[in-house]
Length: 161
Ligand SMILES: CC(C)(COP(=O)(O)OP(=O)(O)OC[C@H]1O[C@@H](n2cnc3c(N)ncnc32)[C@H](O)[C@@H]1OP(=O)(O)O)[C@@H](O)C(=O)NCCC(=O)NCCS
Image 1 (tube, rainbow, N blue to C red):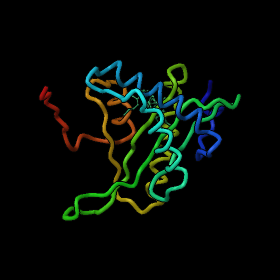
Image 2 (cartoon, protein in one colour; image 1 turned 90 degrees about the vertical axis):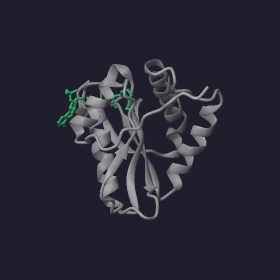
Image 3 (cartoon, rainbow, N blue to C red; image 1 turned 45 degrees about the horizontal axis):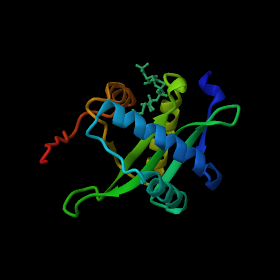
Image 4 (cartoon, rainbow, N blue to C red; image 1 turned 45 degrees about the vertical axis):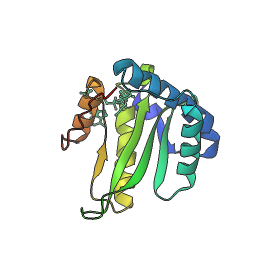
């Protein structure tokens, strides 16, 4: 599917079921590449509330990618995040989720969603954007590098039990 056939727009309440379904696929993807990444069995309910709030909050937003047949094939969930008070700037853009269904990857849809995300952050007056990506997510790491994100902080983890 050429990317021009896929439309990126702000999400609306009617999209919530489809966004939750995309989130479930995203979580499956994450847990398949990093077994230490775990999601609660009832996580979908929490995500749904979180996503529904994002539709109403001025500090969060959701963009979806919709195919010409009307199917939602990807989404990105964004926050305005706060820094610890003695850092500046006080706020930055945080990409909480970015996901495209497997058959639709590599067609520029993630790129389009991300351009919408970066434009939204700029509209909020934010000076920079950040995100977390699993070290094992080689495709994800490469994608963010292509978009222009560069390594800034390493986020090591140590198992205690
Ligand atoms: C990471 C992910 C969101 C990227 O989405 P995608 O639709 O597959 O990516 P795109 O097709 O937009 O980008 C792929 C390539 O096209 C490039 N590209 C696409 N549109 C472009 C444009 N208009 N101009 C310049 N480059 C472009 C990208 O930079 C990238 O380069 P590559 O060819 O070297 O790979 C998607 O692969 C995914 O959902 N993966 C699983 C979930 C995941 O890992 N999410 C991120 C977690 S942090």
